[in-house]
Image 1 (cartoon, helix red, strand yellow):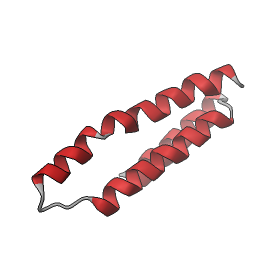
Image 2 (cartoon, one colour):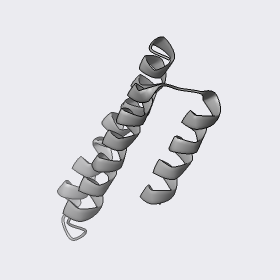
Image 3 (cartoon, one colour):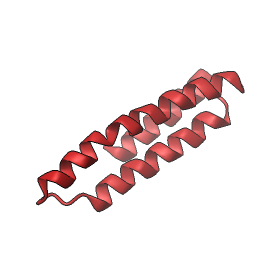
Image 4 (cartoon, helix red, strand yellow):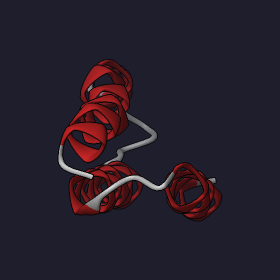
Length: 73
């Protein structure tokens, strides 16, 4: 899922003609997703809840990338 999300975001940015800040945000998004996958303790409900709540940050990264990518394109 994470790989497909990052790939789709990158293709969407290319199609929209966004600048380099967008791709930096997509890379940060990919790093966040990789962190979640590799550090999630599926036997710990508190950890899973914390990872779920961190998705606010994950969603904010591409949004800020779109804004910055448009301003600096």
